[in-house]
Amino acid sequence: MTDYQAKADTMLEDHDEECEELAADLSRFRGVDSIADQASIERLFSPGLAKEISLYAEQQQLDPRGFLLPILTTISSVVGNRAVVAAEPGNDWTEPAILWGINLAPASGGKSPTAKPATEDALVPWQIREREKHAAALARWKNDKAEAEEGGAEAISVFLSTNPQPEQRHLLTNDATFEKLETMLAGGSTPGLLALHDEMGRWFSQLCRSQQQNDRAKWLGLYPGSAIITDRIGREGVLVHRPAVSIFGNLQPQRLEALWKADAAANDGQADGDGLWSRFLLVNLPDWSYRYRRSSRKLAPVLRTLYEQIDAAAAALPPGHDDRPPVVTLAPDALPLFVEWVDELEAMKRAAREPAAQQYLGKQRGNTLRLALALHAARQAGNGFGLDTLISRQDLEGGILLTLLFFAERQKALALVAGGRSGAIKRLLDKGKEWRKEHGSAPVPARTVRNWGMPERNASIKAVRDWLRQVVTTPGCGAVEGQGSALVWLPPGDAQ
Image (cartoon, rainbow, N blue to C red; front, side, top):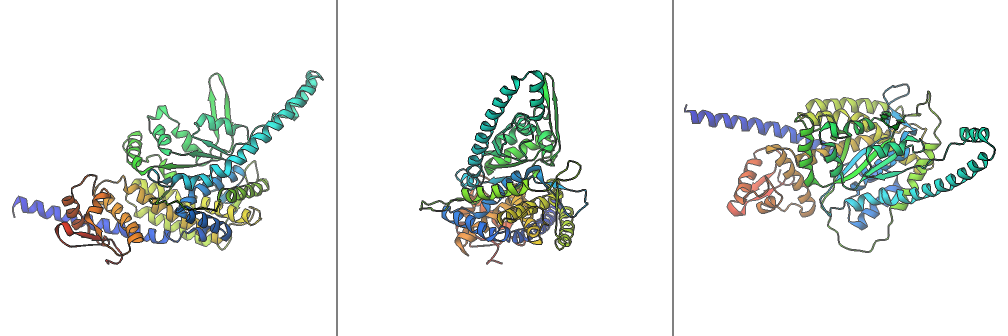
Protein backbone atom coordinates (compact mmCIF):
# COMPACT_ATOMS: atom_id res chain seq x y z
CA MET A 1 0.00 0.00 0.00
CA THR A 2 1.41 3.41 -0.97
CA ASP A 3 1.78 6.24 1.54
CA TYR A 4 -0.83 8.18 -0.43
CA GLN A 5 -3.34 5.29 -0.25
CA ALA A 6 -2.74 4.86 3.49
CA LYS A 7 -3.29 8.58 4.07
CA ALA A 8 -6.48 8.50 1.98
CA ASP A 9 -7.81 5.50 3.93
CA THR A 10 -7.06 7.27 7.23
CA MET A 11 -8.86 10.39 6.05
CA LEU A 12 -11.85 8.26 5.02
CA GLU A 13 -11.95 6.56 8.42
CA ASP A 14 -11.76 9.95 10.18
CA HIS A 15 -14.57 11.23 7.95
CA ASP A 16 -16.75 8.20 8.71
CA GLU A 17 -16.13 8.59 12.45
CA GLU A 18 -16.93 12.30 12.26
CA CYS A 19 -20.16 11.57 10.37
CA GLU A 20 -21.15 9.00 12.98
CA GLU A 21 -20.52 11.39 15.87
CA LEU A 22 -22.33 14.21 14.12
CA ALA A 23 -25.33 11.99 13.34
CA ALA A 24 -25.63 11.07 17.04
CA ASP A 25 -25.28 14.71 18.03
CA LEU A 26 -27.94 15.80 15.53
CA SER A 27 -30.25 13.02 16.68
CA ARG A 28 -30.13 14.33 20.27
CA PHE A 29 -30.55 17.86 18.99
CA ARG A 30 -33.65 16.99 16.96
CA GLY A 31 -35.10 15.02 19.89
CA VAL A 32 -34.86 18.01 22.18
CA ASP A 33 -36.06 20.31 19.41
CA SER A 34 -39.23 18.29 18.78
CA ILE A 35 -40.16 18.23 22.47
CA ALA A 36 -39.38 21.94 22.84
CA ASP A 37 -41.92 22.69 20.11
CA GLN A 38 -44.60 21.80 22.68
CA ALA A 39 -43.68 24.88 24.76
CA SER A 40 -46.50 26.99 23.34
CA ILE A 41 -47.95 30.14 24.88
CA GLU A 42 -51.29 28.35 25.27
CA ARG A 43 -49.70 25.55 27.28
CA LEU A 44 -47.63 27.80 29.54
CA PHE A 45 -50.00 30.59 30.56
CA SER A 46 -53.62 30.88 31.63
CA PRO A 47 -56.11 31.00 28.72
CA GLY A 48 -56.84 34.74 29.07
CA LEU A 49 -53.20 35.80 29.09
CA ALA A 50 -52.26 33.36 26.31
CA LYS A 51 -55.06 34.75 24.15
CA GLU A 52 -53.91 38.36 24.64
CA ILE A 53 -50.30 37.50 23.78
CA SER A 54 -51.29 35.46 20.73
CA LEU A 55 -53.67 38.09 19.35
CA TYR A 56 -51.12 40.87 19.83
CA ALA A 57 -48.37 38.76 18.25
CA GLU A 58 -50.61 37.90 15.30
CA GLN A 59 -51.49 41.55 14.61
CA GLN A 60 -47.84 42.56 14.83
CA GLN A 61 -46.74 39.52 12.77
CA LEU A 62 -44.38 38.45 15.55
CA ASP A 63 -43.45 35.01 16.88
CA PRO A 64 -45.30 34.58 20.22
CA ARG A 65 -42.22 32.87 21.70
CA GLY A 66 -40.39 36.17 21.46
CA PHE A 67 -42.47 37.36 24.42
CA LEU A 68 -41.48 34.48 26.71
CA LEU A 69 -38.21 35.78 28.14
CA PRO A 70 -39.28 39.44 28.51
CA ILE A 71 -42.37 38.31 30.45
CA LEU A 72 -40.69 35.62 32.56
CA THR A 73 -37.72 37.79 33.56
CA THR A 74 -40.07 40.64 34.48
CA ILE A 75 -42.29 38.36 36.57
CA SER A 76 -39.20 37.14 38.44
CA SER A 77 -38.06 40.72 39.06
CA VAL A 78 -41.45 41.59 40.55
CA VAL A 79 -41.44 38.60 42.91
CA GLY A 80 -37.86 39.52 43.81
CA ASN A 81 -36.45 38.46 47.17
CA ARG A 82 -39.86 37.83 48.73
CA ALA A 83 -39.93 34.12 47.86
CA VAL A 84 -37.64 31.24 46.93
CA VAL A 85 -38.51 27.87 45.42
CA ALA A 86 -37.55 24.34 46.49
CA ALA A 87 -38.55 20.86 45.40
CA GLU A 88 -40.06 19.98 48.79
CA PRO A 89 -40.32 21.37 52.34
CA GLY A 90 -37.18 21.21 54.44
CA ASN A 91 -34.86 20.96 51.44
CA ASP A 92 -31.87 23.27 51.86
CA TRP A 93 -31.50 23.57 48.07
CA THR A 94 -33.55 26.64 47.20
CA GLU A 95 -33.58 28.86 44.13
CA PRO A 96 -34.38 32.61 44.09
CA ALA A 97 -36.83 34.31 41.74
CA ILE A 98 -34.06 35.42 39.38
CA LEU A 99 -33.95 34.79 35.62
CA TRP A 100 -31.55 36.10 32.98
CA GLY A 101 -32.58 36.04 29.33
CA ILE A 102 -31.64 37.24 25.84
CA ASN A 103 -33.59 37.49 22.59
CA LEU A 104 -31.36 36.99 19.56
CA ALA A 105 -32.38 38.68 16.31
CA PRO A 106 -30.72 40.68 13.51
CA ALA A 107 -31.25 44.40 13.00
CA SER A 108 -34.96 45.13 12.40
CA GLY A 109 -35.67 41.57 13.49
CA GLY A 110 -38.48 42.41 15.90
CA LYS A 111 -36.46 42.57 19.13
CA SER A 112 -37.95 45.82 20.45
CA PRO A 113 -41.58 45.08 19.42
CA THR A 114 -41.47 41.89 21.49
CA ALA A 115 -39.51 43.29 24.44
CA LYS A 116 -41.00 46.75 25.00
CA PRO A 117 -44.64 45.80 25.69
CA ALA A 118 -43.49 43.26 28.30
CA THR A 119 -40.84 45.42 29.98
CA GLU A 120 -40.57 49.19 29.52
CA ASP A 121 -44.13 49.90 28.36
CA ALA A 122 -45.52 47.85 31.23
CA LEU A 123 -43.16 49.06 33.99
CA VAL A 124 -42.38 52.72 33.22
CA PRO A 125 -45.86 54.06 34.15
CA TRP A 126 -45.62 52.06 37.37
CA GLN A 127 -42.12 53.43 37.98
CA ILE A 128 -43.44 56.99 37.51
CA ARG A 129 -46.11 56.34 40.13
CA GLU A 130 -43.46 55.04 42.52
CA ARG A 131 -41.40 58.19 41.97
CA GLU A 132 -44.39 60.44 42.59
CA LYS A 133 -45.32 58.46 45.70
CA HIS A 134 -41.75 58.76 46.98
CA ALA A 135 -41.65 62.52 46.29
CA ALA A 136 -44.86 63.03 48.28
CA ALA A 137 -43.63 60.85 51.17
CA LEU A 138 -40.27 62.65 51.21
CA ALA A 139 -41.98 66.05 51.33
CA ARG A 140 -44.09 64.94 54.32
CA TRP A 141 -41.02 63.52 56.05
CA LYS A 142 -39.04 66.73 55.62
CA ASN A 143 -41.95 68.76 56.99
CA ASP A 144 -42.26 66.47 60.04
CA LYS A 145 -38.49 66.57 60.54
CA ALA A 146 -38.54 70.39 60.55
CA GLU A 147 -41.25 70.37 63.21
CA ALA A 148 -39.24 67.89 65.30
CA GLU A 149 -36.15 70.10 65.07
CA GLU A 150 -38.08 72.86 66.81
CA GLY A 151 -38.27 70.60 69.88
CA GLY A 152 -34.50 70.41 70.27
CA ALA A 153 -31.85 67.72 69.96
CA GLU A 154 -33.72 65.06 71.92
CA ALA A 155 -36.90 65.47 69.86
CA ILE A 156 -35.08 65.23 66.55
CA SER A 157 -33.16 62.19 67.79
CA VAL A 158 -36.39 60.42 68.69
CA PHE A 159 -37.93 61.39 65.34
CA LEU A 160 -35.02 60.07 63.27
CA SER A 161 -34.86 56.79 65.21
CA THR A 162 -38.53 56.06 64.54
CA ASN A 163 -38.97 57.71 61.13
CA PRO A 164 -36.27 56.74 58.63
CA GLN A 165 -36.09 58.81 55.47
CA PRO A 166 -38.39 57.36 52.77
CA GLU A 167 -36.66 55.51 49.95
CA GLN A 168 -37.86 55.14 46.40
CA ARG A 169 -38.69 51.72 45.01
CA HIS A 170 -37.07 50.92 41.66
CA LEU A 171 -38.62 48.49 39.20
CA LEU A 172 -36.23 48.64 36.26
CA THR A 173 -33.00 50.20 35.14
CA ASN A 174 -31.40 50.58 31.72
CA ASP A 175 -27.73 49.64 31.22
CA ALA A 176 -26.90 50.24 34.88
CA THR A 177 -23.38 49.81 36.22
CA PHE A 178 -22.87 47.49 39.15
CA GLU A 179 -22.27 50.47 41.45
CA LYS A 180 -25.62 51.92 40.41
CA LEU A 181 -27.33 48.61 41.18
CA GLU A 182 -25.77 48.58 44.63
CA THR A 183 -27.15 52.05 45.33
CA MET A 184 -30.64 51.15 44.12
CA LEU A 185 -30.79 47.93 46.14
CA ALA A 186 -29.05 49.04 49.34
CA GLY A 187 -32.04 50.63 51.05
CA GLY A 188 -34.23 47.54 50.99
CA SER A 189 -37.24 49.26 49.44
CA THR A 190 -36.64 47.47 46.12
CA PRO A 191 -37.44 43.75 46.55
CA GLY A 192 -36.57 42.97 42.95
CA LEU A 193 -35.17 44.78 39.94
CA LEU A 194 -35.15 44.23 36.18
CA ALA A 195 -31.86 45.23 34.54
CA LEU A 196 -32.83 45.98 30.96
CA HIS A 197 -30.37 46.12 28.05
CA ASP A 198 -31.66 47.04 24.63
CA GLU A 199 -28.33 45.81 23.25
CA MET A 200 -26.51 43.21 25.36
CA GLY A 201 -23.36 43.36 23.24
CA ARG A 202 -21.90 46.34 25.06
CA TRP A 203 -22.58 44.78 28.48
CA PHE A 204 -20.89 41.53 27.51
CA SER A 205 -17.92 43.26 25.90
CA GLN A 206 -17.26 45.17 29.12
CA LEU A 207 -17.21 41.90 31.06
CA CYS A 208 -14.80 40.29 28.59
CA ARG A 209 -11.95 42.62 29.43
CA SER A 210 -9.18 41.47 31.75
CA GLN A 211 -10.57 40.30 35.06
CA GLN A 212 -8.88 43.15 36.93
CA GLN A 213 -10.89 45.70 34.91
CA ASN A 214 -14.44 44.40 35.11
CA ASP A 215 -17.24 43.49 37.53
CA ARG A 216 -17.74 40.02 36.09
CA ALA A 217 -17.35 38.20 39.40
CA LYS A 218 -19.84 40.55 41.05
CA TRP A 219 -22.45 39.93 38.36
CA LEU A 220 -21.90 36.17 38.67
CA GLY A 221 -22.55 36.53 42.40
CA LEU A 222 -25.90 38.18 41.71
CA TYR A 223 -27.34 35.15 39.93
CA PRO A 224 -27.73 33.01 43.09
CA GLY A 225 -28.81 36.08 45.05
CA SER A 226 -25.62 36.20 47.12
CA ALA A 227 -25.24 39.14 49.48
CA ILE A 228 -23.42 42.20 48.19
CA ILE A 229 -20.79 43.42 50.64
CA THR A 230 -18.65 46.27 49.34
CA ASP A 231 -16.18 48.37 51.32
CA ARG A 232 -14.58 51.32 49.59
CA ILE A 233 -11.89 53.70 50.78
CA GLY A 234 -13.34 57.12 51.52
CA ARG A 235 -16.94 55.95 50.96
CA GLU A 236 -19.59 54.28 53.06
CA GLY A 237 -19.72 50.52 52.53
CA VAL A 238 -22.67 48.81 50.84
CA LEU A 239 -24.55 45.81 52.19
CA VAL A 240 -27.42 44.22 50.30
CA HIS A 241 -28.55 41.15 52.19
CA ARG A 242 -30.73 39.51 49.50
CA PRO A 243 -30.30 41.15 46.08
CA ALA A 244 -32.70 39.97 43.38
CA VAL A 245 -31.75 41.24 39.94
CA SER A 246 -33.24 39.67 36.82
CA ILE A 247 -31.75 40.60 33.45
CA PHE A 248 -33.25 40.84 29.99
CA GLY A 249 -31.63 42.10 26.82
CA ASN A 250 -31.43 41.85 23.05
CA LEU A 251 -28.43 40.78 20.99
CA GLN A 252 -27.70 40.64 17.29
CA PRO A 253 -26.44 37.22 16.13
CA GLN A 254 -23.71 38.92 14.08
CA ARG A 255 -22.06 40.02 17.33
CA LEU A 256 -22.18 36.59 18.91
CA GLU A 257 -19.02 35.23 17.31
CA ALA A 258 -16.82 38.17 18.35
CA LEU A 259 -18.24 38.14 21.89
CA TRP A 260 -17.70 34.39 22.19
CA LYS A 261 -14.06 34.78 21.12
CA ALA A 262 -13.60 37.67 23.56
CA ASP A 263 -15.11 35.55 26.31
CA ALA A 264 -12.65 32.76 25.52
CA ALA A 265 -9.78 35.26 25.70
CA ALA A 266 -10.99 36.41 29.12
CA ASN A 267 -11.17 32.81 30.41
CA ASP A 268 -7.83 31.27 29.47
CA GLY A 269 -9.01 30.16 26.04
CA GLN A 270 -12.29 28.56 27.13
CA ALA A 271 -15.48 30.47 26.33
CA ASP A 272 -17.99 30.44 29.17
CA GLY A 273 -15.28 29.08 31.45
CA ASP A 274 -16.89 30.61 34.53
CA GLY A 275 -20.51 30.05 33.48
CA LEU A 276 -21.52 33.61 32.63
CA TRP A 277 -23.20 32.58 29.36
CA SER A 278 -24.64 29.46 31.01
CA ARG A 279 -26.74 31.63 33.26
CA PHE A 280 -28.58 33.15 30.29
CA LEU A 281 -31.61 31.64 28.59
CA LEU A 282 -31.83 32.32 24.84
CA VAL A 283 -34.54 32.58 22.19
CA ASN A 284 -33.75 33.03 18.50
CA LEU A 285 -36.30 35.27 16.80
CA PRO A 286 -37.06 34.46 13.16
CA ASP A 287 -36.82 37.11 10.46
CA TRP A 288 -39.57 39.68 11.00
CA SER A 289 -41.48 40.16 7.75
CA TYR A 290 -43.66 43.11 8.72
CA ARG A 291 -46.41 44.59 6.57
CA TYR A 292 -48.40 47.50 7.93
CA ARG A 293 -51.90 46.69 9.09
CA ARG A 294 -54.26 48.27 11.58
CA SER A 295 -53.82 46.94 15.09
CA SER A 296 -56.23 47.22 17.99
CA ARG A 297 -54.59 45.00 20.65
CA LYS A 298 -52.53 46.53 23.45
CA LEU A 299 -50.40 44.09 25.41
CA ALA A 300 -48.59 46.40 27.84
CA PRO A 301 -51.70 47.30 29.95
CA VAL A 302 -52.59 43.62 30.25
CA LEU A 303 -49.10 42.72 31.45
CA ARG A 304 -48.90 45.75 33.77
CA THR A 305 -52.07 44.57 35.50
CA LEU A 306 -50.62 41.05 35.81
CA TYR A 307 -47.34 42.35 37.25
CA GLU A 308 -49.20 44.46 39.82
CA GLN A 309 -51.28 41.44 40.80
CA ILE A 310 -48.08 39.42 41.26
CA ASP A 311 -46.57 42.25 43.30
CA ALA A 312 -49.57 42.32 45.64
CA ALA A 313 -49.50 38.55 46.02
CA ALA A 314 -45.75 38.55 46.74
CA ALA A 315 -46.17 41.31 49.34
CA ALA A 316 -48.87 39.22 51.07
CA LEU A 317 -46.61 36.18 51.51
CA PRO A 318 -46.07 35.22 55.15
CA PRO A 319 -42.62 35.93 56.56
CA GLY A 320 -40.02 33.19 56.41
CA HIS A 321 -37.89 31.90 59.28
CA ASP A 322 -34.58 33.35 60.51
CA ASP A 323 -34.83 36.40 58.25
CA ARG A 324 -35.16 34.18 55.20
CA PRO A 325 -37.88 34.45 52.55
CA PRO A 326 -40.74 31.93 52.53
CA VAL A 327 -40.22 28.78 50.47
CA VAL A 328 -42.69 27.80 47.72
CA THR A 329 -42.54 24.07 46.95
CA LEU A 330 -43.82 21.55 44.43
CA ALA A 331 -47.13 19.75 44.84
CA PRO A 332 -46.83 16.07 45.86
CA ASP A 333 -47.87 14.84 42.40
CA ALA A 334 -45.21 17.06 40.77
CA LEU A 335 -42.28 15.81 42.84
CA PRO A 336 -41.86 12.39 41.11
CA LEU A 337 -41.76 14.17 37.75
CA PHE A 338 -39.04 16.51 39.02
CA VAL A 339 -36.97 13.56 40.29
CA GLU A 340 -37.26 11.92 36.87
CA TRP A 341 -36.35 15.21 35.15
CA VAL A 342 -33.21 15.66 37.26
CA ASP A 343 -32.05 12.18 36.18
CA GLU A 344 -32.76 13.06 32.53
CA LEU A 345 -30.74 16.27 32.80
CA GLU A 346 -27.84 14.35 34.28
CA ALA A 347 -27.95 11.92 31.36
CA MET A 348 -28.01 14.82 28.88
CA LYS A 349 -25.06 16.37 30.69
CA ARG A 350 -23.01 13.16 30.46
CA ALA A 351 -23.85 12.84 26.76
CA ALA A 352 -22.79 16.39 25.93
CA ARG A 353 -19.24 16.65 24.55
CA GLU A 354 -18.66 20.38 24.84
CA PRO A 355 -17.68 21.71 28.31
CA ALA A 356 -19.91 24.77 27.78
CA ALA A 357 -22.93 22.54 27.11
CA GLN A 358 -22.14 20.40 30.15
CA GLN A 359 -21.91 23.48 32.33
CA TYR A 360 -25.17 24.86 30.95
CA LEU A 361 -27.07 21.61 31.50
CA GLY A 362 -25.73 21.43 35.04
CA LYS A 363 -27.55 24.67 35.85
CA GLN A 364 -30.89 23.65 34.38
CA ARG A 365 -32.18 21.82 37.47
CA GLY A 366 -32.29 25.11 39.30
CA ASN A 367 -33.52 27.02 36.26
CA THR A 368 -36.43 24.59 35.89
CA LEU A 369 -37.55 25.43 39.42
CA ARG A 370 -37.14 29.15 38.79
CA LEU A 371 -39.22 28.92 35.61
CA ALA A 372 -41.90 26.89 37.39
CA LEU A 373 -42.07 29.55 40.10
CA ALA A 374 -42.53 32.31 37.50
CA LEU A 375 -45.32 30.35 35.78
CA HIS A 376 -46.88 29.64 39.17
CA ALA A 377 -46.81 33.35 40.07
CA ALA A 378 -48.46 34.33 36.79
CA ARG A 379 -51.19 31.72 37.01
CA GLN A 380 -51.97 32.20 40.72
CA ALA A 381 -51.90 35.99 40.88
CA GLY A 382 -53.62 36.35 37.51
CA ASN A 383 -56.53 34.33 38.88
CA GLY A 384 -56.68 36.28 42.13
CA PHE A 385 -54.97 33.64 44.31
CA GLY A 386 -51.96 33.87 46.62
CA LEU A 387 -48.46 32.59 45.95
CA ASP A 388 -48.21 30.57 49.18
CA THR A 389 -49.70 27.50 47.50
CA LEU A 390 -47.96 24.46 46.03
CA ILE A 391 -46.58 24.63 42.50
CA SER A 392 -48.77 22.42 40.34
CA ARG A 393 -47.57 19.61 38.12
CA GLN A 394 -48.84 21.67 35.18
CA ASP A 395 -46.50 24.57 36.00
CA LEU A 396 -43.58 22.19 36.59
CA GLU A 397 -44.27 20.60 33.18
CA GLY A 398 -44.22 24.11 31.74
CA GLY A 399 -40.88 24.76 33.39
CA ILE A 400 -39.46 21.54 31.90
CA LEU A 401 -40.74 22.36 28.42
CA LEU A 402 -39.24 25.84 28.67
CA THR A 403 -35.92 24.38 29.80
CA LEU A 404 -35.87 22.12 26.73
CA LEU A 405 -36.92 24.99 24.48
CA PHE A 406 -34.16 27.27 25.76
CA PHE A 407 -31.60 24.46 25.44
CA ALA A 408 -32.59 23.87 21.81
CA GLU A 409 -32.45 27.62 21.17
CA ARG A 410 -29.01 27.82 22.76
CA GLN A 411 -27.79 25.00 20.52
CA LYS A 412 -28.99 26.93 17.48
CA ALA A 413 -27.33 30.13 18.70
CA LEU A 414 -23.99 28.47 19.43
CA ALA A 415 -24.02 26.83 16.02
CA LEU A 416 -23.23 30.36 14.81
CA VAL A 417 -19.92 30.27 16.66
CA ALA A 418 -19.11 26.56 16.42
CA GLY A 419 -16.32 25.88 13.99
CA GLY A 420 -16.02 23.15 11.41
CA ARG A 421 -18.50 20.76 9.89
CA SER A 422 -20.80 20.35 12.91
CA GLY A 423 -21.59 24.03 13.38
CA ALA A 424 -22.24 24.67 9.68
CA ILE A 425 -24.55 21.65 9.33
CA LYS A 426 -26.57 22.64 12.38
CA ARG A 427 -27.01 26.12 10.93
CA LEU A 428 -28.08 24.60 7.63
CA LEU A 429 -30.67 22.37 9.32
CA ASP A 430 -32.11 25.32 11.24
CA LYS A 431 -32.46 27.27 8.00
CA GLY A 432 -33.97 24.23 6.34
CA LYS A 433 -36.60 24.00 9.07
CA GLU A 434 -37.54 27.66 8.54
CA TRP A 435 -37.61 27.10 4.76
CA ARG A 436 -40.09 24.22 5.08
CA LYS A 437 -42.41 26.34 7.24
CA GLU A 438 -42.58 28.96 4.49
CA HIS A 439 -42.13 26.95 1.28
CA GLY A 440 -43.39 23.49 2.18
CA SER A 441 -41.71 20.64 0.29
CA ALA A 442 -40.09 22.89 -2.33
CA PRO A 443 -36.35 22.16 -2.65
CA VAL A 444 -33.72 24.74 -1.68
CA PRO A 445 -31.54 25.96 -4.57
CA ALA A 446 -27.81 25.80 -3.94
CA ARG A 447 -27.61 29.56 -4.51
CA THR A 448 -30.02 30.09 -1.61
CA VAL A 449 -27.74 28.01 0.62
CA ARG A 450 -24.87 30.21 -0.53
CA ASN A 451 -26.86 33.33 0.41
CA TRP A 452 -27.36 31.83 3.87
CA GLY A 453 -23.57 32.05 4.29
CA MET A 454 -22.85 28.32 4.28
CA PRO A 455 -20.61 26.51 4.58
CA GLU A 456 -18.88 29.85 5.15
CA ARG A 457 -19.30 33.46 4.13
CA ASN A 458 -18.45 34.26 0.48
CA ALA A 459 -18.07 30.60 -0.50
CA SER A 460 -18.20 29.97 -4.24
CA ILE A 461 -21.29 28.30 -5.68
CA LYS A 462 -19.14 25.29 -6.63
CA ALA A 463 -17.89 25.01 -3.03
CA VAL A 464 -21.51 25.14 -1.80
CA ARG A 465 -22.57 22.34 -4.18
CA ASP A 466 -19.60 20.15 -3.20
CA TRP A 467 -20.31 20.80 0.47
CA LEU A 468 -24.01 19.88 0.12
CA ARG A 469 -23.03 16.57 -1.47
CA GLN A 470 -20.87 15.86 1.58
CA VAL A 471 -23.52 17.03 4.05
CA VAL A 472 -26.11 14.51 2.92
CA THR A 473 -23.73 11.63 3.63
CA THR A 474 -24.58 12.24 7.30
CA PRO A 475 -27.88 10.55 8.25
CA GLY A 476 -30.72 12.95 8.92
CA CYS A 477 -29.31 15.80 6.84
CA GLY A 478 -31.66 15.60 3.86
CA ALA A 479 -30.86 14.79 0.24
CA VAL A 480 -29.64 16.47 -2.94
CA GLU A 481 -31.06 16.25 -6.43
CA GLY A 482 -29.84 17.38 -9.83
CA GLN A 483 -26.40 17.98 -11.23
CA GLY A 484 -24.16 20.99 -11.81
CA SER A 485 -25.90 24.35 -11.62
CA ALA A 486 -29.31 22.68 -11.11
CA LEU A 487 -28.31 21.09 -7.78
CA VAL A 488 -30.95 21.51 -5.04
CA TRP A 489 -31.10 20.46 -1.40
CA LEU A 490 -34.14 18.77 0.18
CA PRO A 491 -34.15 19.49 3.95
CA PRO A 492 -35.05 16.61 6.29
CA GLY A 493 -38.77 15.97 6.28
CA ASP A 494 -40.39 15.02 3.02
CA ALA A 495 -36.98 13.99 1.75
CA GLN A 496 -36.58 11.20 4.30
